[in-house]
Length: 395
Image (cartoon, rainbow, N blue to C red; front, side, top):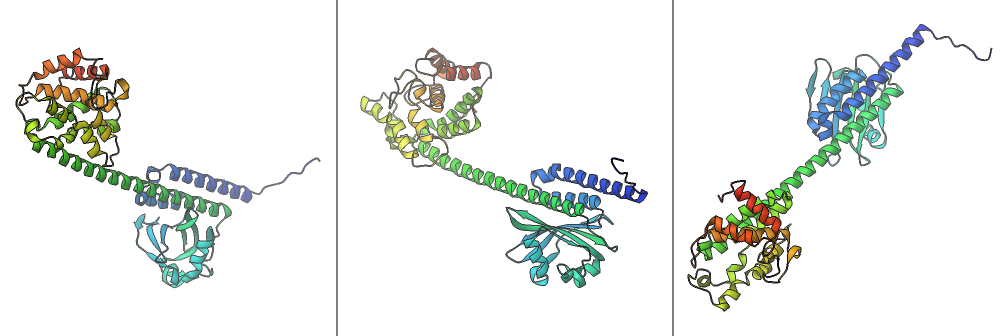
């Protein structure tokens, strides 16, 4: 014979089948854990409950618990303890390092504590009187949870009443479960960091909004005839930007800039701003300094958008005939080109001490006639669409 036949007893076959069934159950549990929504989104409380339930069934143990380490206080705190009978969750138990130093040392230095006889194992016998005997625990399989290489917690699997020898497959499975808990911790930390960042950004945005509103009211207190002008310009400018399908970040920067685009007028004497007659050449030149003055004031504020430059350029014109720098075409920031159109439409449609309101139709006629001359044709197109097709109205 070139080979030899190995006879397997029925008991051997049953043992192999049981082993394969256990491996399949373990593999299925890991898949469930790694894809569970609570694990993925970092909802640690919910994830801990699902992990302990799934693992208790897969490993066929009575008790599974997840503990997190507070290294500063030298304690492990139970975040979730699941009992298969009667399917109950609890939390809050505390394990102190001073009470069981051998166990803490083992978890800090190793991957798994596999105590087949927990009451006599030197690593776990410190729990015997206060924990093991009262709960009927005979064997423990505890796996270290490590985050960034440091011990962050422990996953405990506890056999009740009957003795148990932990197989190599079960020990490996416990390590994989600990890895899933570590991933959940990292996802939770990431989620909290993102939430903290969102809260921080929201606070900064609110602070900027308050600052902008204070600056806007400062201008309007000195020039009552244009009270509400900046706000209405901001509304129209934002609507134009949305019609052009621009990004939310650009729109927010444009809105903020529009609300304070005339801040430079705080340096123009109030009697000139509200003068009912024709301005002298000197007075006109003084008013034309307000974009530069506004820029010089706002450049000191650390906005997340180019607010100072937008304010500086909002009187520049497509053909280069504007002020203060004579920029033309796309040399002018897109936000400033939008703001320029919105500013003209609102100003012409509103009353001023030196002239009566000319109305929306007249204002739109003028910007339309100057499309591609004074104003960006794409901006004008979006503006006209708002009024003629979207029925835009100033609020």
